Length: 352
Image (cartoon, rainbow, N blue to C red):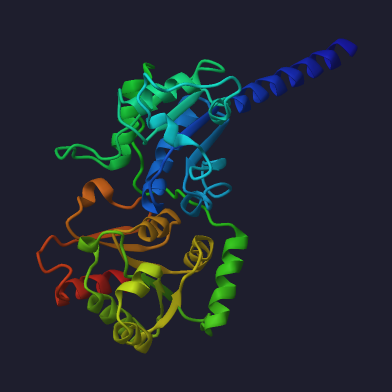
């Protein structure tokens, strides 16, 4: 009996040691992009975690974009790119130097694998990063391109994964990213936060909620505002509550008259933090937006998402989520004139 107990204790210790060894293996992704870029990096992070058996994946980027990721995604820890002395890595390799106990060494000291979207392959940045990361221990560094070649016919996430496999030197199985995956899981605290926001607006919780975000980082990606106003007006007439989300760029871009037009057909929320936006979206039944970071966020949360694409390749940059419909319009009048045809298609998809 005593021997059996001892064996059980040894088995438990081995299991604990194995778990500790797994958790000790960390990976880092340097992602300097905005919200959409960070969301589309999540499948790569999950692939690294699974295929390399990493216990932890960190992401180094702009905290205003990546702060929502831990606890809701496969990302475990965030680090601020603005508080990290990365500009030194862009120096010419011949002039790059590290002092003893250099703080830059500590930035990368914990990682077995580092993937960077900063710099280019064989650039000064890459060579200096490799040198820095390997000062404390052996580290694999892989530089990925953010944009696929023009003839690439698959999704961007496939491009990231294939680049990683090709450069890793390992025989890794390429698992196709499922376009219906839920990348971001809202917490109960997120939903509570969203409900508090809705209460402040006087929202009728007996009705369905559609969130519309008419902005985008690129001016050529912005569908004409009248298309969104028409959708909001028709949805409201059918008893559906609509809320417009306007960020600082929309408030700067739209005239007072246009903002008045928005307020005449729907409620409007402005200058929300990304955490507040996530909370609001977690309470929504549907979302309509341009090719933007907030659209990728809505899709990643599993919300019914209607994504309006202009000149961007929707096959490569389509948001990932279980209920995503893309409406592609490459006409020259995409940003300049409203489209009754587009409005009808969007309404039909919303009301399905």
